[in-house]
Length: 363
Image 1 (cartoon, rainbow, N blue to C red):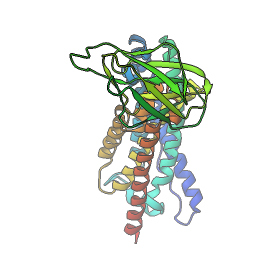
Image 2: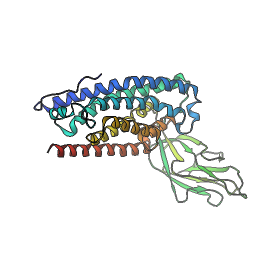
Image 3: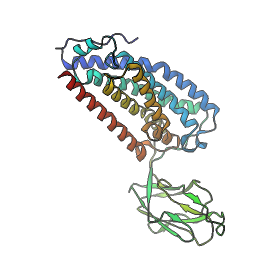
Image 4: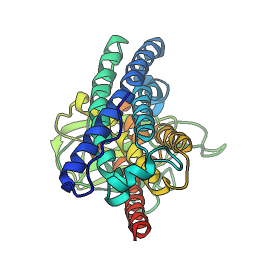
């Protein structure tokens, strides 16, 4: 139980009311997420221990999916408890009219309530990130070393075969790099070309990066070329006129691995905390439609938003966990940053709309 909603006199200082509502939201979310977080962490640890090693799963699938369980369970528990505890979140809730009269302010006090709930959830998700690392160590997982990646941009046709023997790539950063990673798509060259591997040579700013030819035999096979740390501006990929498969470099299949250590523990915590963003969006939507939708439906909608964020690469939480599982430094991942910005903009728009509607309703 979180106790009754905090009620202060309408003429009380705004910071007094907001502080009390913040604390109320913090307690409600903290109590609501504790049991789901612990249960989800235990189940995920047992399942991950029984699965193949994480590094063998493409883009963090299988084991990576189970990493979502404790974070998503904590987010759902926190949101459900917060919506159930605050009378102004949901149509026809008991004591809603009294709380609305005694808690004047934008969106019926949902802003400080949401800030408190999301603060508690953030702390719980930081703990979930540490729990991920403990679960992976217990399961004897060997995570790939965490590194920051910078994409290379192809100039012209991004294909290499006997008819297109040269491809120019430009770097998107001037930061020092320590290796090149290629994961191109392989295309059958037809009966004449057969399925012979494609041989490649790489030059950086006119200087060769390796001696022996690189061979690409299948789609998305990882080819890594380590070299002495240097700043690279342009790369040239060359092949010979021998028949064989063609290789296609779509965006994301040619990247530089940047120099500098990255913390896998910090990356795990960032991946877990990314679940706050779908939770914030769910609370903002709940604030917007609170006078028209019952609290039970709001809880279901919040749960669905969190699950969509966990299961989809079109949300920051899904993209961040996949990046963590692949050993990619999350702050350098453009798709994570893009989807985080989109979801946060949606949350901000819903919050502003809720404030405008609440102002019109009072007037």
